[in-house]
Amino acid sequence: MHIDDYRIAVIYDFGLLPVPDSLQRSLAALFASRCRRKWKSLRTSDQVWTYVKVFADFLSQQDPCPQDLDQLTAGLLRQWRMSRQVTVSGATTLKTVRSLLRDDSRLQSGPVADELARIVRKPVRRQESFEDEELEAVRRAARPLFRSALLRIEENARHLERWHAGEFADGSREWTVGECLEHLARTGSVPTYVLPSNQRTIRSKYITALGGTSPQVTWQRLYLSRMEAASLAVLLMTEFGWNLSVIDRLPVPQAAADQGADGRPTYTVDLVKPRRGPGNWFESENVTDLGADSPGRLVTQALAATRFARAGVERRAPGTDRLIVFRLSRPNHRRAVKRAAPVGPFAFGVSDSDVVRWVEAAGLAGSPFRRGRRTVTVQRREPAQHSRATNERHYVLADKRAQRDAIPVIAQGAEEAVRQAKAAVLAAVLRDAPEPSDVETATADCSAPEASPWPAADGGCGASFLLCLACTNAHVHPGHHPRLTHLHQCLGHLHSVLSPAAWARDWEDHHARLADLKRKLGDGVWRQALARVTDRDRHIVDLLLNGVLNP
Image (cartoon, rainbow, N blue to C red; front, top):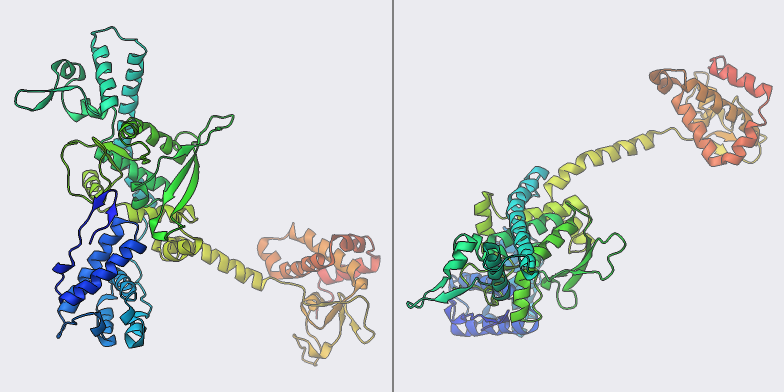
């Protein structure tokens, strides 16, 4: 079996699986069908091939081993499920193999089909996002290497421009360096010649002008190295939260034609996500270069650092659209890797093995991409390359740092809810006119003194008249409005002269209920009522505030 990806043919030999021939052929047929219909990435086929081998190993250990897929039983599949679902990788293997087996017509009905239809739940992933200082340490590890490469390339680009402009005297060291840079930009290598031994070497005049033969003073003058490209990938992850597979095949961002009056470029970055399936592979982000330390500035720098390599690729393979391009240290050495084929001396993207080498060189503990992507996603508080539901379920809610950071927010919300629940609000019923059967009090009319929430020893109401507004038996009609507006005003004056403790203990709840009444009546009604306050209203309010009318 084979699948073509980046012009690479990969062989999957099902004859090596430790199961009978008929079972090998059935698994191969299912695999081939998926290659043709669904899988668009070599990485996917490699992963599924690994899972199929695990499943075949499991079947080979059974006694007896099934001869073909039609001999699978629900009990055997249940045993397979119980052996794998305790880990994240095991659950992924289960889901993938289950999906593959369900394509076989012999397994689409009966107890086996029911078992294959069971939902496989992945265990909670224990991986956490970085702390802020940890993510910053990753940035500090990546930034110097890429920045030094960018400065080196920019310096040599300026030298090449001056050479083209004729600023150097013929035969001078600067002129010879410029001639060498021109050849390097055009061919990807400095000028060389072949010795009688068929060994290729740099001409001596260029060795003298360049200062040696090491990559640092020869081809790295205009091109990124593999590790510098990996540093750029890490920085893109820390700025945008893109995962490694997206960065690996990132197309060249396109700047808008109109950069506006400020001249700041806005780039459209196309992101490729094959796992989403046909029709949903692509999405785009707009990023503006707002100056130093802005994410858009990193895109500008990435374009500058890779421009000579991308131009070299375009001359050899027009239409190749990749941002991360670097120069191979040994262009003629071809490793058997399942990646995009190099174009001349240039290679593309960043592989998992590149990340391993970068991590070792940086002295970090493990790849920063998964945790770093999670960190940036949680920090931005918005989805990156996925739906809001996926963002909340798999990134924010599942992340221990996000959970920890949410504790004070949740506590504040809970305290506010309690405060609102405890807040004194108007309980009295608003009426348009007095009820003849009601009993008048100092602040409202009472419809049932004998049913008071604060009963007195004699069976009547034992509460202060200020509490009438907190009682559902009370009725407030327009005749009460002037007195209550004046009472609200007087309590406001008290607030300005009392200590916070005294105010909260004696008057805050009463003032809050009157404020609630004001909100319900509206500012216009309230102002009109305040204009109608009588001397009798003022006298009764004075008695209330001085405690004369308290029970």
